[in-house]
Each structure stands twice: as structure tokens, then as C-alpha cells.
Amino acid sequence: MSEIYFTKEHEWVKVSGSSAVCGISDHAAHELGDITFVELPAIGKVVKQEEVMAAIESVKAASDIYAPVSGTVVKVNSELDDAPEKVNESGEEAAWMVELELADAAELSKLMTKAQYEAYLKTL
Image (cartoon, rainbow, N blue to C red; front, side):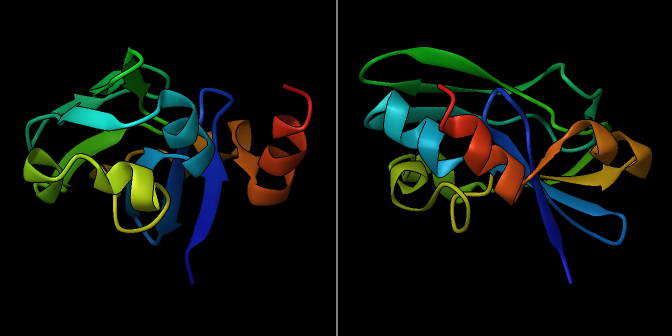
């Protein structure tokens, strides 16, 4: 069973064993508006928690996407190259962006559970 965690910058990560699939929350996708471009990292890139991992552009803004956890990129969602609008349709499911080989599961303690994230959104 995988668990989902969120950052205050609206990234999410679903962890299953040593695999960590990442993307941006539905809330972030909605706030950005129509997504026009997603720049994904190269496979093999090592990312550190809270460092820039990818970038996204919309009709409203361009934003960096930060790594919710540290790890090595093992897979990217290349479907987003031709269909970045999938992020608007399913930010927390089909429009995952990066799969990492998780470097340190202890970093998850710095993130919010789904319930904590939903409570956090109410404070914004």
C-alpha cells in the first residue's frame, strides 16, 4: 500500500517501498490555471529534498517544482511532453511527473499527510 504526503509548496509524493512517485497537487494545478508546458528532469539525475526538480508553465505563471524527497530519477511521465494539460485534469493521479528511487525514508517525517495538507489549504 502506498502512502501520499504533501509539501507546503504543493508537491506530493506517493511512496511504495523504495519507490517515490511525485507531482503537484490538484490545488496547485488549479491555482496555476491551464498548464502549457512541463519540464521534467533527466533519468539518472540525483535530487535533494526541497531543491528544484522540474518546472511547469501555465497561462498565468511559470513555477519551479521542488523535490518532496531526495532520490535518483528512475522514470519520468513523458506523456506530459505532448499533453501537459493532463496536470489540470489529474494532478494527483495520471499526471504524476517523476519517479524516484527514495534515498531516505526519514525525510517523509518533514511532510504532511493528506489530512494535514487539506487542513493547511484551509489556512491559505
